[in-house]
Image 1 (tube, rainbow, N blue to C red):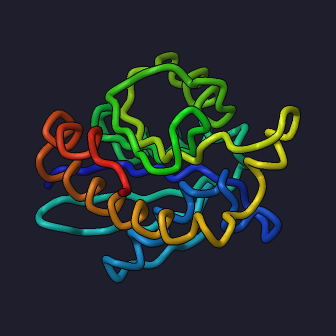
Image 2 (image 1 turned 90 degrees about the horizontal axis):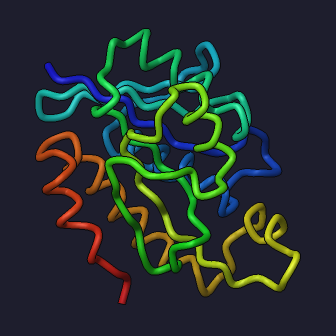
Image 3 (image 1 turned 180 degrees about the vertical axis):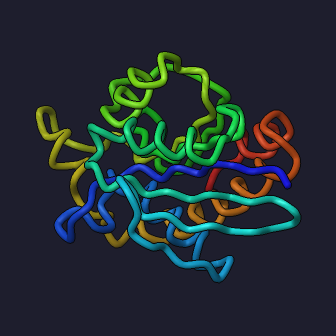
Length: 191
């Protein structure tokens, strides 16, 4: 049975719940809920195991805060003996418009502190990432407030559609692989 590590990035604590920066947590929670699984608190992360179509998807939400996400990633990568190519990290991305998601097999941290920490601990940027565009519609100097802010009511319908697309993307990644899934999602856009 193939095994995958699905990592949703976010910050623990109610003040961060459902903010733009926590979209990795929100996507993973929706995925686990869809597959009737449950998170339990374990070492450095909340962990859920989803069994689907002959695959095991170990889903983690690091409880280390965003800037230390690499510790939890590495712990479960090693503990579950999962190949780095069978990991998928779900993360918010300022450089992508709100209407897009992007799947890549590698790539820089693009200034994202969670990815920066994972990259430092793994010693590589070559691991699959699903980037959830949050746009960059904020006044100069207000990036932190924007990223740590909540979606506005105009954005919510787009966010919901994109979360659904992300759930499908996670399933496709595990079932048909990275390349074919990239072809399905990287040109997709919320109309």
